[in-house]
Image (cartoon, rainbow, N blue to C red; front, side):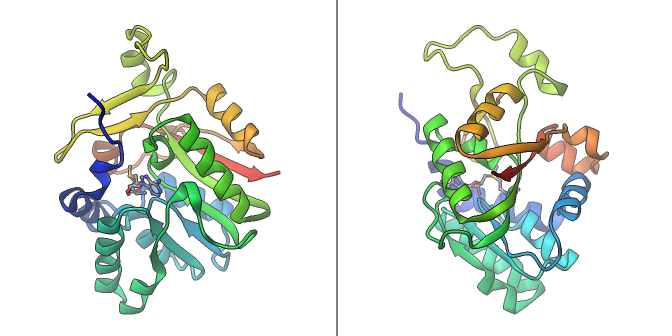
Amino acid sequence: MHRDPKAHWREPKTALMYARTATQIGLWESERIMVRRYFALTDDLLEVGCGGGRAGLGMLKLGYTGLQLTDFSEAMVSITRGVLADINPTWAGLVAQQDATALTYSDASFDGVIYAFNGLMCLPDRDARLAALRSIHRVLRPRGILIFTAPDREKGKNAAHWKNQSLPVDGIPGNRWHETETSPVFMHSSTEQETYAELELCGFTTLTSPLSTEVAMDSKAARDFAGETRFYVVRKV
Ligand SMILES: C[S@@+](CC[C@H](N)C(=O)[O-])C[C@H]1O[C@@H](n2cnc3c(N)ncnc32)[C@H](O)[C@@H]1O
């Protein structure tokens, strides 16, 4: 049976669940460390796949003044506007509907891009990931930085699950549908080597790729929601 990986993100109930994470979990400590380390407060920044505004709201609260939040899903965009407007009515205007695989901003518009909490790995397949990486590369300025996370198949707490899996019929390891409070969600888990190769193909060089647990001990709420994941900080070549 064909399942559409995008359907989950269009559901108002899923958007509500993500909006709750914006107010109840907020920016993880590991995310706070990474964005403060690689993005200046006055940088022009783009968030793709912003969900319910969790990471973006956290960054606005930290004092990032040049941030735009985007998501392809109308439900996510609408709920994020509400979440931000509750804190500061002018922030609702920072949210726009954009598909990460076909961004419409001009070339070289941003100093940095963030694709938080495994968003890149929710895209339907490798072609979609490459399209998103190329689109992000195009809107970044020379030497611009992209920060994202991806679940790791070989290291950390997810490794045991993947070790026991036989190769699926489609021959692509790492694809998995997870149950959630709403509908099942598609997620790809990669190895560092696979992700480095995809990044290199799209014109990025990797600066660092630590597991989230190597960056900080995140709050219990963040760990319960997101588990362990791997950060990639990459630069446009
Ligand atoms: C795992 S959620 C992460 C949400 C948010 N970044 C966070 O940290 O809470 C993945 C997000 O990517 C969005 N997404 C999926 N496909 C997308 C696409 N093609 N373009 C932009 N966003 C997309 C979903 O709507 C969802 O909001």
